[in-house]
Amino acid sequence: MPLLKAQKHELAQKYLASVESANNVIVLAFHAIPVNELNQVRMDLYEAQWTIEIVKKRVLLKWLAWKFDGLTLDQAWWSVALLYSQNEEEPFAPLKVISNHIKAWKKAKLEFSFDYVGWWIDATWQDKDHVTELANLPSKEELVWKFIYMLNHPVSSFARVLQAIADKPTEEDHVPAEATEA
Image 1 (cartoon, rainbow, N blue to C red):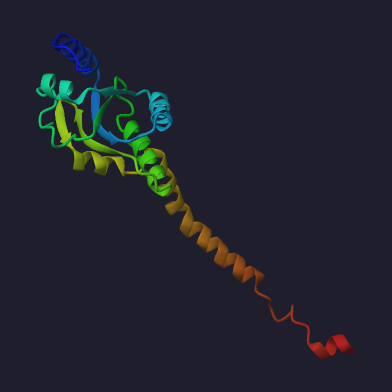
Image 2 (cartoon, one colour):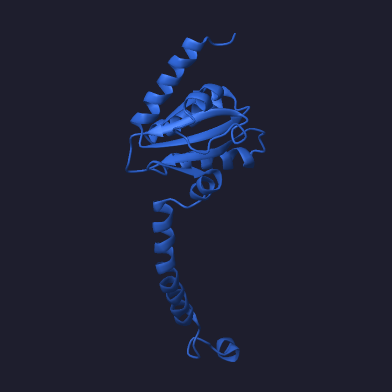
């Protein structure tokens, strides 16, 4: 049953309140995601201190188009969700959560997925390509471990070479075969 104009206006006010209280807002399109998978995404986002809200696409586009410059119906032709948070410490956390779920679904060859529409961060709209690129960057912990591995690899390689030299048998270790038979 279609919503009345007053109900749509009420929904738009609710979306607006959520969006205005947030520092960052990510707009996602999604298709055919089962409820249990969406709940898992919701729990993972909650741990990262982000909120996901499934929105009425037409209401969002009609009443909040001024907030999301550049958001059109062409970019969001599936169902739409908003991710928002007041957490300024980890602005890229939801991108990793969504990216991990997308990778897991592709690995399992499942037919559903998220698609980034854009990101409204620091009062500027970033398009789908920019958000996708940011989502595929390694996290801080991954970069630290890669850096530590880079520093450790030459040292451990040198240690293996020294160990191989130390383990190499010398002439004194070789006992002639005739000496052992006598």
